[in-house]
Each structure stands twice: as C-alpha cells, then as structure tokens.
Length: 68
Image 1: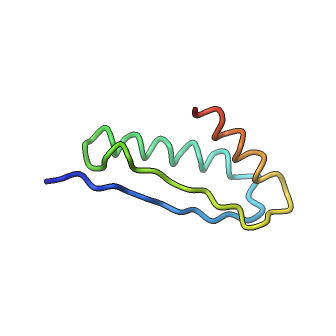
Image 2: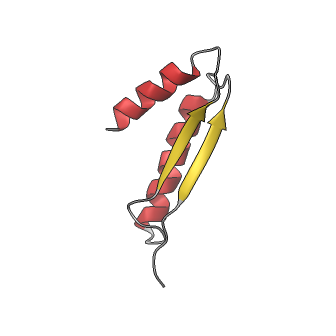
C-alpha cells in the first residue's frame, strides 16, 4: 500500500482560548500517523485565520515559530 499525502485546512475565527491546544493535538496526531507509515512526510495542515479580532493569529504564529 502506498502512502498518501494528507492535507488538512482548519479555519478559525476568534479561537484564542483553544488554538494552542488544537495545534499541539494536531501535531501529535500528524506525527503518529506519519510514524505508523500511513502518510508521507509531506503531509501538513494549514490554519487559516478568518479575520479574528482576538489573539488567534498571534498565538498561531508563536506556535508555528516554536515548531520550526
């Protein structure tokens, strides 16, 4: 069975209370699925901020930076 590329798009709007835990959990799941050989290393997820008025984008950016 060949591995697939998994691409996930997560829209968010004013999610500052949950965005950090959501990103961490998604990264865990993505790593587990990769480790089990079910998806390629090229798999990814996008977090799209739909004009939040809170700190969603700032928190998302900090999480992204800490993962590099």
